[in-house]
Image 1 (tube, rainbow, N blue to C red):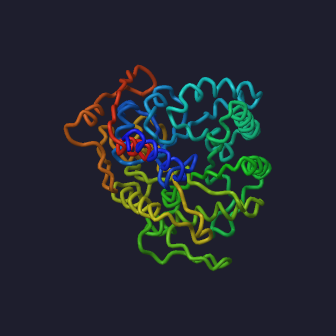
Image 2: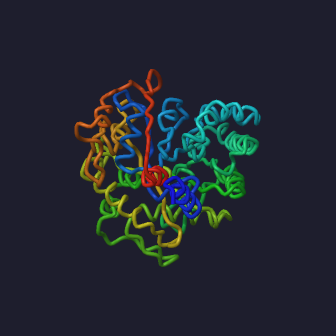
Image 3: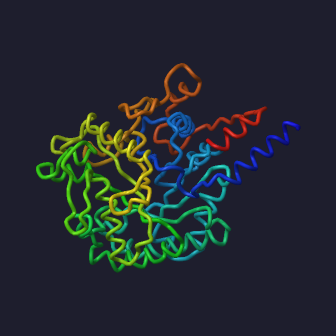
Length: 392
C-alpha cells in the first residue's frame, strides 16, 4: 500500500475519532498578559508554550502580532474585547461585525481562536453604564459570528470576579448580589441559550491576603489541613479553590442555571508582595501552582459537582513589570522574561543553546508594535510527523 494512502487513512481516522472540545483542550490553561517592557516576543512565547505543553491561553485584547505569531501553533486562544469597547459594540451589530472582521476573521483558521471574552469583570465593577452595555454587546458579537458562520467554533463569554457574589461562605450559601442579579440573570439566560460556560476569576490568594488571621494558609494552598464542613450540604472541602468553584455552582443553581458549567478564567498566587500582602512569596506561589496543576491533571470534579471536570486558566504566564497597583500585581508569573521558570512546578521552560531558546532574548518593548515575524516552512516526509502535528 502506498505511503500517501496510509497517511490519508491515519489522518482520516484521527480526525474522525478524536473528540476535541471546541474551546478548551484538557483542563489547564494560562493567561498571557503583556503589560510589560521586558517579556519575549509573541513568536518566542509560542515556542515557550509548546515546550511547556500548554494548549490553552487567554489574552486581554486581539493583538495582531500575537494572533499572527500563533498561526499554525494549534494553541487555543480566547481573545478579549476590552471594557473600553463595550459601549460602542453594544450600540449595533455592525459595530461588532467590524470588530470581528478586523480582529478575528483575518487570522482564522490558521490561528485557533476558540472564544471571545466580552469585557472582563464588568459586573464586579462600579460602572453601571458598562453593566447595561454588557448583554447587548455580547448579543451583537454572537449575532455577527452567526452571520459569518463562526458561532459554532468561537465561543462568546464574559469572565466575572468574586465581587458578583453577596456571600460565598459556606459554598452552599452563595448567591449573586441583589444589585447585580438584575443584570447577570439575563446574561446567564443568553449564555445558556448559546451553551457558554460561566467564567469566574477565583483567587484563594486574595481571600487569604484579606484575612490571614482567620484563613488557614494550608487550606488555601491545597496542603494538609482540617478543611471546612458545609453543614447545610454536609460536604467537606479540603481546599479553598474547590470551595470557590462550588460556591459559583450554588449561586447559579439558585438563579435557575443548574446546567451551566463553571470554568475558572483566572487563578494564581503572587511570588512577591508589599509588607501588608500576607502570603505573597515564592514558596507559597510555587506550592499553590504546583498543587493546582496536580489537582487539574487528575481531571476530577468538586465535592458538589464530582462529575464536572474542573478547568482553569492560571494567572499569569509572565511577571508584568508595568502593571499598576500593589507589588503582587507584578509578580504572578510562572515564567521569567528570559523564558526560564520562576519556580519549579514541573515546567522546563526554554533552556540550552537551541535556536528556539536563543530567540527568547529578542525583546520587543510592550509587544504592541515592531515585531518581525519570521516564517518557517516545515517539510514532513512521514505519517508520524503528520499525526504529531495534528495532536500537538
